[in-house]
Image 1: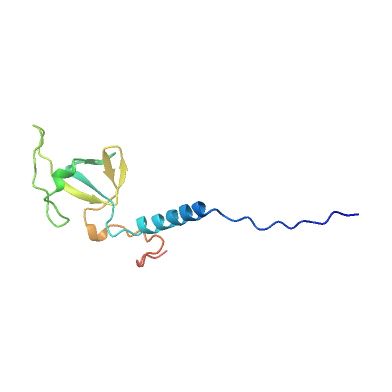
Image 2 (image 1 turned 135 degrees about the horizontal axis):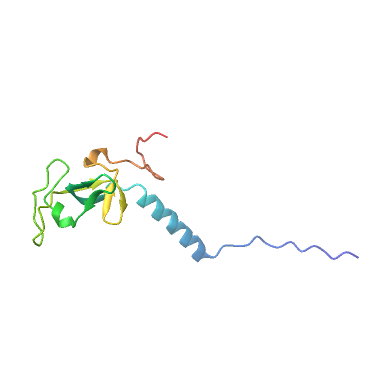
Length: 120
């Protein structure tokens, strides 16, 4: 005689698994569609063809905006720093390149849930 086949109930996910998964999805949605583009404070006078702009302390950019040039502040006996915010750049160590000084031209990456008009 054949043994009756026992049908197993579908496996239920634990509530902690569901909550953690939901939190991850929410975090991804919120961070991928931020209103502020990534920015670094750089010295506009430090451009190097290989490395880009030298990243400096954000205090050099405090009084600077995307429409005005930095005030040429000096820090600890060093030469003048022309600090300016540099948006959506590739950063490698203390150098940033391939970005823009114009905040309005900073790339809209258009993540999950964004209503941006980026094509593609």
